[in-house]
Image (cartoon, rainbow over all chains, first blue to last red; front, side, top):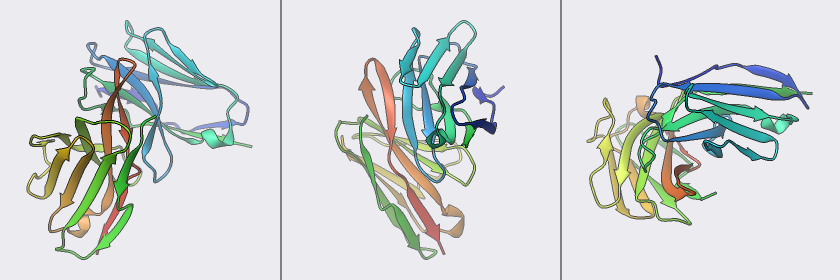
Length: 111
Length: 117
């Protein structure tokens, strides 16, 4: 089993749609969780950290379910500019140590 | 978010030469920096963890003598690809770790695209 698993997609959605991505992780002791977005031929950019209480930033909502070892990202009112690859990332130790990356989920928002 | 810069953004070099890539954290002190490489349409692959003032920790399969890492200060880490070969052509990305709201978030530099001819 992979340490962090994501559906690679692609998810093709029309502008304005709501889309949800899921991610599961295998290490139950993992401490910190993140969603990054990566555009083609660019570096990953931190989208949001994922807290136990869940968090929301504008159109983006992230949830963490420790019992199920599951992280989600919800994007409401999709924009063309949301087209990117979304990486689910886990920090097993919660310190300044290496991250474990999912392979990413590709999102394509169309007119 | 924090800002991490990388230089150069793009380099083309001849086989056998060495290339140095710099990674700087511009607005925070990074005790730990990470070096990754990424091939087209593939996931990021961690190469090494660079700790300020100590030797880097390399991932399995990464040659430490080929990919020299120096982390001399809290804001600068360098990766030198020695005696580069065409198979070293890749997208090299660094990241720096900073503590924010209880999470050690990692911020990535813009990457360096290396082409070895």
